[in-house]
Length: 157
Image (cartoon, rainbow, N blue to C red; front, side, top):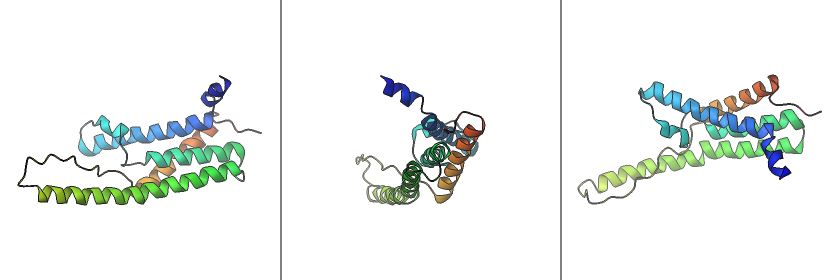
C-alpha cells in the first residue's frame, strides 16, 4: 500500500502529467481561436499544436534532472526516452498521417461512384510537425522550471 502512496507523492510525475494536460488544454484554446468553435475532441486526440507527448517527456526529463542531478543515470534514461518519443511524434507518426491522408483521397476517388462502400476513413492527424514538437518541449521545460521555482518540485539534497 505504501507503493501507491509513493506514486501519489511523486512530484516529478505529477508535474509531467500537468504539462501534458496543459498542452491538451492549449490545443482546445488554439482550436477555438482558429475555427471559432468549441471542439472538446481535441482534448483526447493525438497530433496538433502543441505536442502533449513532447510536453510530458521534457517535463519528466527536466524534473528528473532537477531532482536527481543532470549527470545522473536517471536523467540520461529520461532524456533518451524523451528524444525517442519526440522523434517518433515528428517522424514516424507524421509520415503515417500523410500516408493516411493519401489513402483516404484514393478511396474517395475510387469509390466516388459507389456510395454503398462504407469503409472507415483512416485517422490523418497522428503526428506532429517539428514546430509542434518544439513548442511542446518548451512548454514541458517551462512548466518543470516553474514548478521548481514555486516550490512544487522540491530538489533533493
